[in-house]
Length: 422
Image (spheres, rainbow, N blue to C red):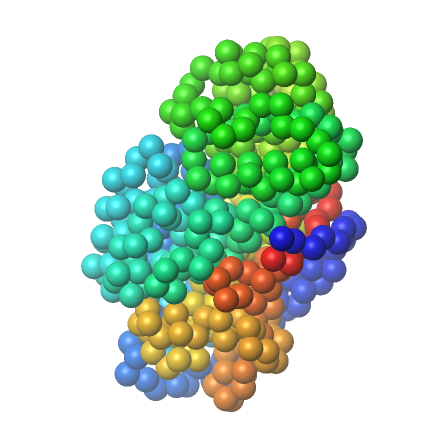
């Protein structure tokens, strides 16, 4: 379960993110600011692979995630790298569950490249399809976006994530819906582990509060390749819900016109991290005004967003999971440094420790944290995304979930964050 506290605008997390950026950009001679650059080691270059959506229904999440990983690598390499060598990034496509062969081929390529860790996938179902192969190769998989509860404590111990499980987002979303006075909730969701897992948590929260799920219970999911939603929308509206939650990916672009065409009010619609996105180019202005959505992760500082934009080579349309991707790459590098080797087993054995699971000195950014490690100190990495240290299931022990409201341009605007402990 989760315990929640409301965090107002200007959440204190922003100060933490700003501190991290200050540490990243501190001046001075590199040899003085990072003992890592002076280290000599037989460990070899640290290789990190990514398995992120460059194509498919979650492709809108790819740019901020890829930029987050690269931003961390650039920061580390500018300070001398790990074991005196640059961190090497190998980007591969995860696509989605409708194209499972792409992720499988990408994983094979990354295993052949002897990466120590793979950052991804974004989709929980994609991860569930490839995690056994990654674990068998003794490579760490660390996802910046997976939320399915089926991945918590995954056998083998090589799977980690910097996004909270659905027990956290689902609780936040369910409480948001209940607090808005929704008593009868309809849910439109696809037949996917991510969607059903999140639905189950929301359903529990709503029903515990005395509410009712009018549509969207087990057996009422639509297929992932569905494209015509007129009849499904009519089915859910026929149950007279006070609000409708849509748990889907790119299918949402077809669901929204069906809902709007049926006259359902936008300010009674709710979305999740898979579809709380910029729809300014997809729909006429005002179509989604007042709709709400949730995305795990605190609202990153403007400075951090600007650095992601620079790394991307232009302004990003979304920053979702960019901070979590940065944190994943940073934690992998810190774990390798602490263990003194650049292989997957070493990274696995040290990830919890550098996250602060056993306590340690708080630090932000590569320079500050690596200096402490090389000095023999235990650290507690202060994540830009606001997540807490890994717990025994290799999930974040705590996390923020951002609440967004769509403006007149159909763009989600961050309004507040809630904090949850798993």
